Image (cartoon, rainbow, N blue to C red; front, side, top):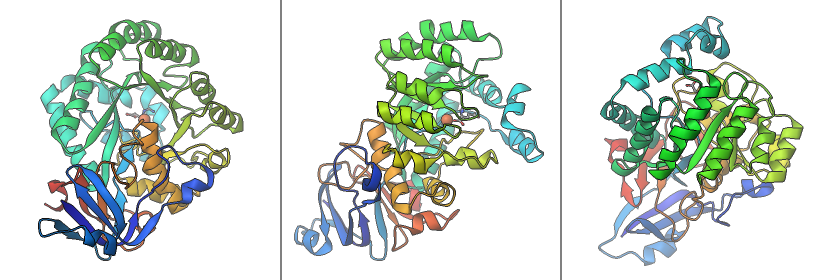
Length: 414
Ligand code: NIG
Ligand code: FE
């Protein structure tokens, strides 16, 4: 048994095992001088230190969290962390004034990462991904959704999905796989031919080999327009995959309405989405996944209208969008900072969006996302006494210890 005691604030997020909306987003269910009892990989009890200490005996390993905040591990519901190479040239070009779209049109952007990822072996990709798994853990994230999308051939997409699965099995980071074959049209072919390849060659194998739970599409004029997105989404549904979608990132192209029409689990980005798009998401109960890291890193100022989404009673999610092009950061605390300073979320709303709501968007709210009896013991101890500090001190990691399924993750303090 393991006991964590004397947390200045144990942020439990106790409540219904589904996504929180409206005022529920502000309810963190904090226990002052809080404690946790862990048996094996699960939480056995949550309470005050006085209550939990009664259940400890001489065999209990006791972790003193005096002066610290304890939070559920962050659940990052949108990442692209399996890729090779980097996008340093794009980064510098944007500083000279080129836009993300201009860079993509001259063959940079996603295509640069596709070339490097195709050239990498499965083992090389795994060792790059393992390093990034450490980055997530060191910043307090214990579960990530992870997308393919930098292979764009049948074999290269399957290779990426196998690496995602292997990270989940061989490192403490838990992964939820998403097939994003429709991320970009590869340079060697045209959109129509490629959509057929995604539908006829990739999706059947992804689903037969159970390599993904979700299918995603980059729904955007120069990538996959509404018509081609529709074809991919229909095929994905027939294959039994649930849907997540990149919509309205660069232009307001009706992607939110399409996500609603298909009953997608999530609609992600939404920077350009207007009131009608928000109403469509609300009517179909689609969860919006907000990705302020990509707005920040692209030097844009147009953040999604998070307040209007909360007012429309949408169960907002906050994620990193970690990828080499538009959001090279695995730091959920940085995303919390952006959510508070740029999107007017309160620190409590941001934490709920990055934990239980993110878990709900991955169909895992019964297992992770809050600190409650019976759930997996995935939690993080921060070196601060008020949860708001996690969003307040930006660019500074306050993570002291990370636990996944009751075990301390060694990379953090080593
Ligand atoms: O979510 N928008 C599409 N995909 C990523 C960027 C991918 C890249 O630039 O490599 C995103 O921002
Ligand atoms: Fe993305």
